[in-house]
Length: 232
Ligand code: ADP
Ligand code: MG
Image 1: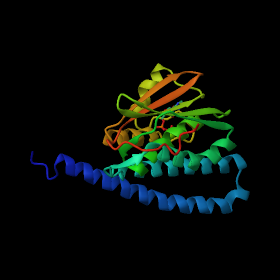
Image 2 (image 1 turned 30 degrees about the horizontal axis):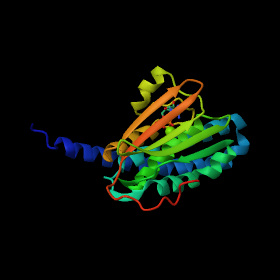
Image 3 (image 1 turned 45 degrees about the vertical axis):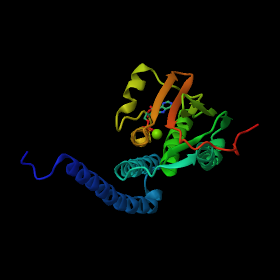
């Protein structure tokens, strides 16, 4: 009770320290990475590559950590969900195709949701990135849009390695990753944004068969007049 800082102030301070720390780590990382290039011909190729990939892993953790710490309250606005989804898919489709992955769109119902466009895109990017990373041999990503029980559903299904019970239970854990270059923060960012939107996320998965991520967003009462992105 005599604490100088109250609970919420402590949290804000912790967030500020985290973001400041992340910034401070990033600068020396950039210097080390730059200097390493000059040393490339004097050390073993495997060592060089290991150092580089570990540096990049730290970089990714720092980037994701900052995204988590800097998360602002969402600016909720009526937004057409199909436009957001389509914009995001177009951002990743080129790279994803090169990895031997095809995206299939099934837009059965696309409403106006009440959300923050950039934050929803961040959610979709993280989920799509995980889907692609689950299919190193290539495969399919199904993106389905439909309205269910007055909510906008987005399903993102992959044909990747899937997850067992134990792995599914660990999904909420921060820094838990099964990837060599992973940060284990992607889903923490997703979870945080979904909570702030009053939205739900659910995972269905089977080892060796694939994973479906189900996202449900609140629909805005404005009804839309046309469906410009609905495929025929
Ligand atoms: P990261 O991608 O950096 O590992 P995430 O928080 O995005 O961190 O994901 C945590 C873990 O959840 C992953 O390492 C992986 O084991 C599992 N995971 C998430 N999405 C999928 C998916 N679509 N298929 C299989 N495993 C997944
Ligand atoms: Mg991820």
